[in-house]
Image (cartoon, rainbow, N blue to C red; front, side, top):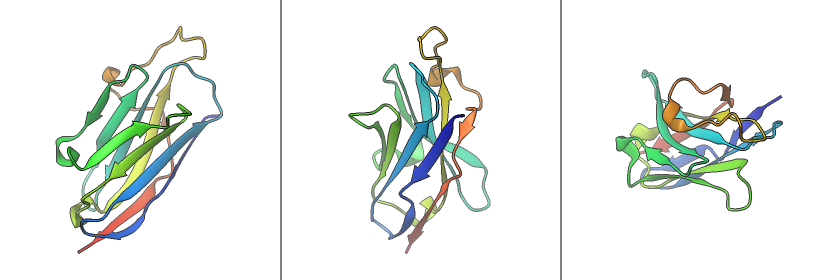
Length: 130
């Protein structure tokens, strides 16, 4: 079965940096959409950034210039979220999610399809102190 595992959360002072990692395992796939979401206290879950196998990358306006999503150079199974210039308003639970195509590339997926991604990790807490 598909597993999505996040790591890298923690506590940092305002202005600091963290790098979150997300690894997908348990399934062979040719195409993918992977995204980072966050749930801030008292707010709904929002998509922060996404990346797919077509190379399309998106970042929500509130994190542009501060957060960067990227894929591991050696493995498409791992995606990172580099978070710089962190602000206390970034405090929340961060989740990685994925949609995966088949291994032959016949059923292809793209982030532009929208909708709820089917595979989710348990989340990692990010706390930014003033």
